[in-house]
Image 1 (cartoon, rainbow, N blue to C red):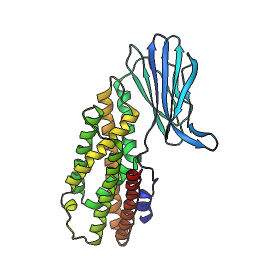
Image 2: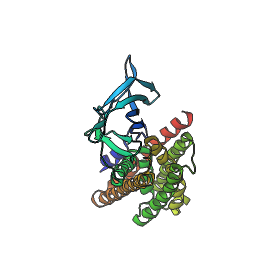
Image 3: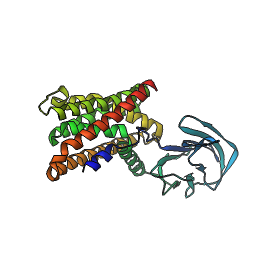
Length: 326
């Protein structure tokens, strides 16, 4: 059980890296399209940053000229003009491959028809263009993306775990998690709809600070179980306050992915519901793990919690220093 708890926090130190590749194919005029992409890079010795995949356009399309590409620190962005003949329904477009558990968002933007959005995976790196699209497809894809962002967005994940370790009592955990949900939903929706926003760098630093803060609180409680700090007495207040900044972080990830034109509200709703589903799964898993440990190996509970707490605090401190000094 100690090994399981330690593995839960023995994670990569590059937090919040759920930034899927994005591919968009836009019709500019009859039979003229532009494909644009933003792909994560891999570093190859002697060749610098290279995209992890290459775009795949429909067979009915021919490239016009050479693609234009430029590299940034983490991505390769490109643009290719296409001449496409006839109806593209049934044609495939997307990426040549996707590695591991990575995914991508592909969008088709016709002139006179609804936008089509697709989630690409390593098993299905291309999508088939539909004759007609529906809201259900958007709901499904953005729900999965939201759930993945909380489950693989390591900084948000560690905050939720630390919150459960601090509060412990199931009903108090529910109240704190609800406050966190309400708070980050407010800033996620407001930022995504353009009503507010904050620069990403200070937001990411505050998110790291929230992890360190909770880790310190958990360590104090483990040292003195009778200690009644403000955070332990009113965990929902702290969860709400930090949740506002986590919402800005979620909005930043969603901005990188993009929202489909004409389906902004369903996509935003589905993403937020996916985040909440992933969060509830984490909360339930940690509570169940603690209960199982308390029943089977109670003598190991306190040492395991100390190891987990110090691991969370160490990782959070690393992120905080990295994000402050850049």
